[in-house]
Length: 125
Image 1: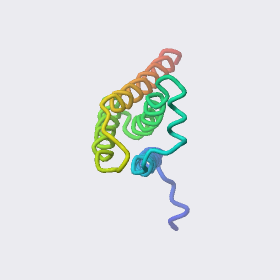
Image 2: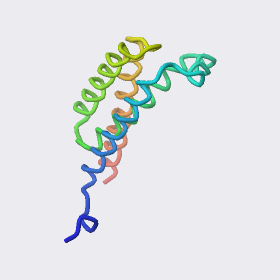
Image 3: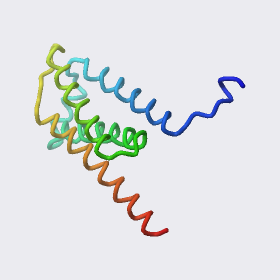
């Protein structure tokens, strides 16, 4: 049996996506603030919406990988905390507890939405 013919489990794929997404977040978090990011200041709470969105995506991948809503939120929140800590060492970046709160809100919102969708599916069967 060749490696290419081996079927990967969906859980493995979601873990891989979660890890890849964390690498993407780490990369962007390692960059000094750019002009593109300053455009977000034109949108009220634009940077917080971005934080909630990208950490919501991470929570989605982790939820799908673990089937555990609390674990998905916990891992996402902890990664958001580590992301803020990491930014302390990046020139031009700063630690912002409100960014971390936006990360947390995004994670919780996505997981609650997924729980609602799955509950509705279970009710209809």
